[in-house]
Length: 90
Image 1 (spheres, rainbow, N blue to C red):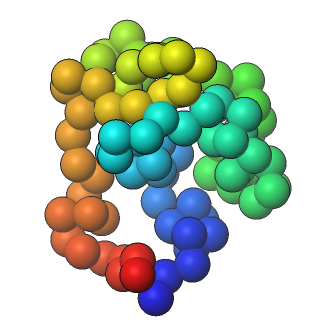
Image 2: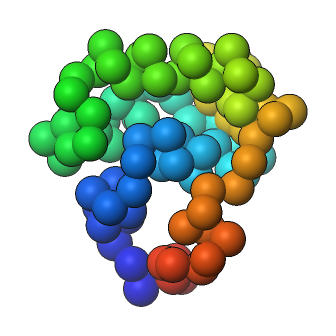
């Protein structure tokens, strides 16, 4: 079984955001921020850069803001690591 921290370390922040927004439940921006904050801002420099990334992904339609949370948008695409079944989550 894969530790989610491994995904945050090995994958791009864009792919991580796509991964955490894949389901029916939304993830709040503070929860997303906490994922990177607790991992010493690996692969992204700070919360401002994360906010910019989220903004650009919303503009592209990859994710949408709904009720204070983020979830997959109409143009959402599956990250390559999911297609490849690189990690096991059970």
